[in-house]
Length: 292
Ligand SMILES: Nc1ncnc2c1ncn2[C@@H]1O[C@H](COP(=O)(O)OP(=O)(O)OP(=O)(O)O)[C@@H](O)[C@H]1O
Ligand SMILES: O=P(O)(O)OC[C@H]1O[C@H](OP(=O)(O)OP(=O)(O)O)[C@H](O)[C@@H]1O
Ligand SMILES: [Mg+2]
Image 1 (tube, rainbow, N blue to C red):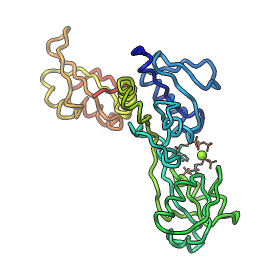
Image 2: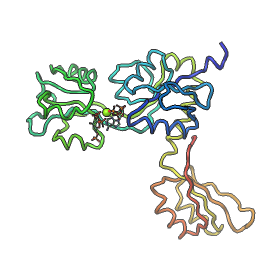
Image 3: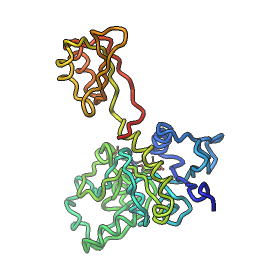
């Protein structure tokens, strides 16, 4: 086997759903450009000849990674738990955040999980739900659904639900109250256990690319010119990543160029304070990737 074959990686990502586009955007920003002529193609090559992308349903991705059909996968932590897949969690992509909750109608009188003994629970997550009640020794029956779970108590087919909530709007609209939080989920990068041992080089390269995009989120790059006399005041205003970088300006000895990475949410206030401290020609630039 050549080195190239040995290090070939298949990465499974969602083909649709709410986390699909943000994941493709993450790969693009990380420099792993997809070469896909048709959105319905199952497998697409990338700009790295050693990496190809497999499009699959988020719920199937943990199993594909566990059995080696894919070496890496990107999906929700809730999906990995539901499938009980034996995979390695490599990186939290810090997106697609949602909480799997146990909820019951506000006017049902049900206030704790124990109140549900002998009752019926509707869910898109039958395994996680079964495990949750089994661990607590509460006997319940399950009513598996594949969507619109919040309507089931109203329809009289379930007494409570186990479903995802992010903004909480759907629960509120359906007059459901949270009894317990079962799992906090975000989108994660997972790896096949065997590939983690034997194809580490390429996996680490992909992980670093994605990690660098995550590190850059919410940050931007400030560049400005500062009179040498005002430098200490400007430095006081600037937090930066390990302090600002200060450089000579070739055309004007009285000036220095100051560069710093700052939190995007602080820029609005920072630029006025920098200007008052003596900074001029301030540029605010986006950062695609940040490698620490
Ligand atoms: N508010 C939310 N509701 C459901 N899933 C969410 C939410 N926010 C993030 N997610 C995550 O998105 C993934 C769901 O993927 P899925 O393909 O089922 O997306 P979807 O947008 O719910 O699609 P579908 O239209 O099939 O319901 C899960 O890992 C889940 O944790
Ligand atoms: O807390 P919220 O922001 O209201 O989001 C939660 C809702 O979003 C998801 O439904 P989805 O849109 O995926 O439809 P589905 O029920 O058909 O899966 C989830 O199943 C909840 O119903
Ligand atoms: Mg859904």
